[in-house]
Length: 434
Image: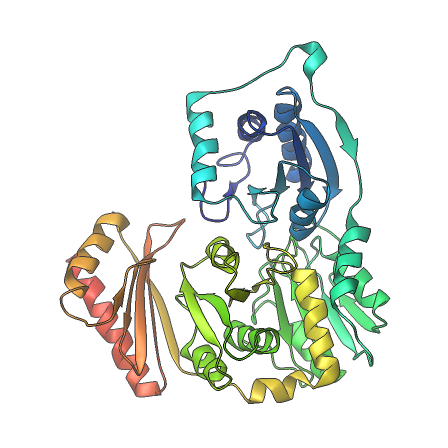
């Protein structure tokens, strides 16, 4: 039921009001007070109502933020002393989808054991429904001002640069408010919340953000883009280059960590990040793919920053949720001190190859991959799939969390070497599938 990022899928199929009601009832068994918010998808209205009904009939009080960025939901869970937070969102997924993501009072997403507990209660139909005089209370509130204030407390911009802000028709309006308070002049794209995402597809990729990059280049401005629930942030430089997620990770990590400190990043992060940070004596701790895993590692006291190239950025001293508006403000602060173009030019980009293979039984395929790889290579990591470190390059073979696919990624510092490593990894998958 739960993937690493919560429940997601097509509305009316995987995600229904009946499911939201059951999640509310299951969470209500353990929670006395829950914060609920949603992204702009129209289906979020009835899903939020159904989930809130399940909570309230379990005796749980509900604080309804209405339409809110997912990091606002996560942070409010801590600010209001709630037992859990729920974001009704499919994040960067396409318009037909919606989802449910659960948050702990620490601002960290529910980890695997907590997700499994909720799923088990749903499967067993375990509830704690109350009589008419024991139902939970309901409160509406807007937490945007608190989120903005939290950003202003940690960001200071003396000479604000020009900014182009692409909200992707999502819930990231808190970024516009924060940048305005910080004194930035900015132009917006796709600023009207609309869960059908008419301006561009929700995921802020280079392909989807071409207009943003072009406008940033024309105006010598910093380009900022969010996804539907504003937990992700991607960016374009003042000369119109849309930054790769790895380059952005390296920039943010370098400016957060001091020599001798550690940052967290997933197994599929580029070697370029390691090489750049190593020049400044900053270590990279590898995690499973997914912002939930990055956040879990970032909760350790030795880690000062966590990032995922997809656009999830975590400052554990601030919050353990990916916070797109905070990341946007921090990046604009860096650009005000030194152009992003100059920062990006210091970071190498290595050739990387990616592809997917459709398989019938991905778990069985991955087991055969492990059996084949372990005795063949010296440095093998099975934290998430199978990653082989070859010194001058690496490859990762892992099962998709949502589709019947096995994904292959390979990288090296040289173009031909990267191609050969990818072919080597592809050959392993082909062999075990034959």
